[in-house]
Image (cartoon, rainbow, N blue to C red; front, side):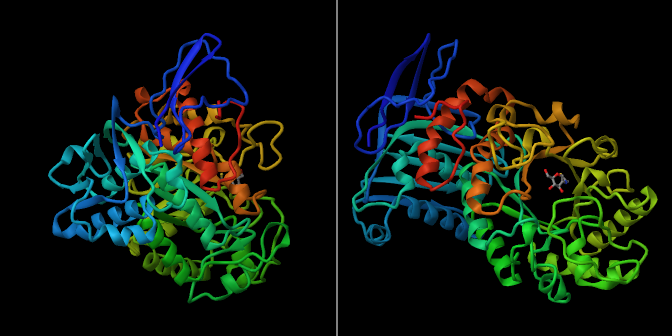
Length: 531
Ligand code: TNX
């Protein structure tokens, strides 16, 4: 592989970018839609999200080959996790047979050194330093997550060929580079709505892989809605037997057994992604109301629902049966959720009085607290008597300000900026459009505090929801999520002054071949100068 600097004049503009794959020399990238830009653009790297600081030395590089070693230096308590990060890096770089052979090497050709040192408090929970010189790679972090993010940056500095299964004797060249990096926000999330249309476990794991590439660390799963209940609750088998049996459009639906869900939680944790379970209530509950008659005030089970209307369903908030079910659900989810969060939804309730609604939220907050779970809800819940430890997720015109005023924490998911189920433009067939048509630039070019009105202290971060009324399979989810989710990742990770649309679009262009190598069905936005 040669890291090639390709220079190409675009009108008045000149840009430099490292794009070419192993052995292809320095051919200039082909541009399908030459963009019109008025200022010269120089993009020396294509790391997304943009690091706090990155310096690349010209003319020096390190070669990773089959006799390069990885060493791990970490205190006892974190040794296993640090080694696991090193193993994942090795799995990216080398074919299994070469990984085994390398273990017995007497004379390595160079070293990649991973050091975990909790004394480096300046690197906080997720920061890292990455130094590539002509003799090796050195990574320093204070946590396993920091080590992992350094390896994801290294991955993006490597040629696209790294995303394909390693051939024997593969050699990868990486430019000498120094990165210092820290995230802006601790909450960098995506949401999958597996209730409207179910997604099999492997598809969700694949989505987690893609999130990890962009340093996203929260996957919120919308596990129950009118059309389906998707998580096994052992004490309440009808929820899945009945409530999980269909989906929008009347397909077979599906659900995750607790064994599968645990597997997913562990898979995500290995990539430093926390799974956030949401059971939407008291509205959006038709699947549960069809499963147990006692959840309805008239004690009559509702028929299953496969349409896409909202706002018509509600638990009977006066009935003890409702709170008994909520307690069972929260207790079982607690045992499945090392993250310790429980998302109660709470959105779009149109059949209760404000007093009934607020009373319900109060009681669910009490149940979450009793189970040692930290409550999250859509910002519709903010008018209730919330504890400042409850987290509120802003999505539209809602009561976010009430929670900010009481000193609570908030997550920014404004529909017009982050909703991955919105169409890109008038030509997009998938998706909805109630919050607008959202191109890549719209998702990228905004500030979470300015748009939501949240104070910097109250804002935990950003999350991009992908509602699935129109999304029937993972290829559709990929099309709507990519590349917009890469833009959200940068909004969540990079300081405002470290990001700019004019450089982002060129860096993102270099991710086209990478996403293609990963088999992602991404949207070829005309705003991006894809090679
Ligand atoms: C609003 S955002 C909803 C969802 C829909 C979505 C479609 C929110 C909390 N509720 O029930 O699926 O719009 O974009």
